[in-house]
Length: 471
Image (cartoon, rainbow, N blue to C red):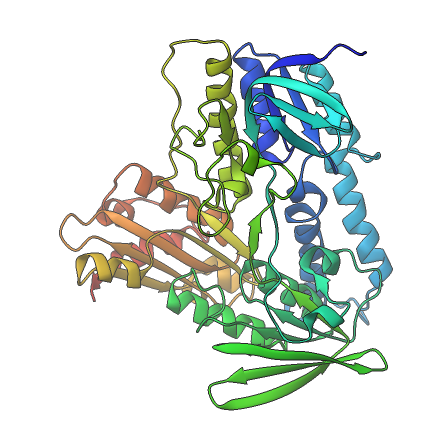
């Protein structure tokens, strides 16, 4: 009988949270085992962030090439090859993961850190033991970092369709002539941007009153205009009543908006309607790890679950669903798990997610941090709001970038920055200055008085701050 292996920390999942947990635990002197049943690195480098941004970059280059004459450049007839676009995506993913069956680059990192890797589905046998492919592993502590799975909404007829999940859409080898995307959040909007840029007819269906429903209403409205400028048909306040197989490779998507029902015939239906915790088959019900009403693992600020030696981090705990927050949570979980395993009295780390920026990559980037104007008004009544059109910036004029806006929200009395929202070129980079201002409790007057280099998109921050008034 083979010897049962024991580790200080066993980490289930190797995505951003899992890898950060492993690195933190090793740094704290713990012996570590990582268990993964798919590709190392998790969703972001293999299926989500990296491949999607590669495709969106290709789409951006194609759009810009089509506008070359605006800059006095004649490139002749502009065309694209969808196969080559897909190969570019694959090359980008390989450069990040290292290729190979499970991700050679990640395997190399684990070996360099002296971390044991086990491939397979993990299932708890008891509070200190998991089984992986018939092998039992004992852990003094655990970190669950298994991420999420897609939510399939209860749409009539959906079970009869060969619908695509958003990951499947990113892996398509053939460009569809038409596509319906159910869900107008960041993933749905990015998919719509990519396919519409290359001429696919796109219908984007959103149940909320606006696309990007977590964004400031004004910015979300401009995001909708950006999508529609690419030819995307955006339908909000919509309920997908039924989907039917019309035969001949055509699906009918029946949509209700108020009392009106419309039908949209498309080649492909893509679901991008949210996620649920990826915990099926882990056996958590056997060890009393508490789950919330949405099905996510409940954790403390130390990333500890209801079982004292079991931690969880990343999307699986239902918090902010970002790669960067998963990385932060994973590090906290791994460090605290190591201290627990080693029985050290050192103070435990706690997550700090007071200030978290986010970016959605449309033909114009949408970036935000902190409170929206609506959220601030609900909390404080009238608030200071500053706006500035991107078209008025010297940098925008040089780049023929006439659309977009910077918007700042500040406290009506203390004048501290509460939120920042931008749609425009480089928004994902610019927004971090506003994030730092919030993090340091800066007042809007400081941003108004700060000298910015000319010509840059960051000048929009000073300009918006200088124009602030009570609303």
